[in-house]
Length: 441
Image (cartoon, one colour):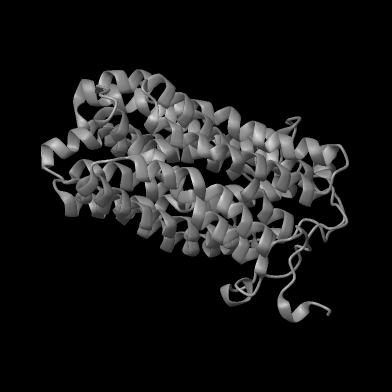
């Protein structure tokens, strides 16, 4: 199913009377929509958390363990879906993931307590784990290296738009029909996305709407482009690469910060800044709205540096460092006297994180062949989810016993600069990954 695209001579794509210019950006739009729906579904419980705690008498640690169950499943299935997508192919692997997470999102409406909500979150986390391995692999299939960071930044901004859209959408369902309707309504969005995906997505060489000129552009390779011939590698081989460990540890350290903002920022605004659900519906999405240009600008900046003649190593790491150094601004939020200043500081932090994310994901296709991209992304995603598993009970118990968000915001501010140090130590120069046994000393 994973036909190499660079080892065959160029030929016209599948015959069709309809040809769409710049079709790769329409494919990027599909990935944007998929990520948007993915984040609406995962963010619904965060927006309703305060209300559900009152209905079901959850403690802070109960909510932490419900979030933990999502992260636990996400970690396991990041590994599973990475391999599934590399073997099934992007089209059918992503379709499986969308079907799974949409059904799981709707199943929350049947939950009635901590255990049943935890079970629904577990199923949701398992299905949603397919989003990023499939999307990054699709970008590697449809974009040349110099455009991948921008394409990743655009589709990754769907996660922040999803977090933004979730506030009015979930609030509308909740205020009109109740909390069960919020889960059912948001979950149903995935099936519309699934239909569009199955209708439109194909590999470039098999897409009837692709022009020959765009196919040639897509398959333009640089001299350091990893070879995509042969079968995808098993896990035991991928784990031999220092580059895979660098990516995974960077995700382990920084993904939990985004999870913290997704799952605890609404509670922080309600409990510490005294927002109502209606006020949250209007203003709670501001930090995620700010993250949209952060993701796109982060992706654009490294592509701009590449076009100016800089190396991939310089372009990616310069952008990553700039984003990492902006993250500590989020610490100022808890010390701000005004909720509006708090929102402004958190917004800088969320924008910087998404700029970081657009480039950290692109490192995989910079260093590994397309046939292994989903597997490596799955490995890193699992590392990020394990970090999320740790932050969930830590946040819950911190709030339950210390009644303060200050330690959590400090953690959120320092992890990206530390991850940048780890990344530089393990990947001193970005290039085609070679396992230790293959290196010439």
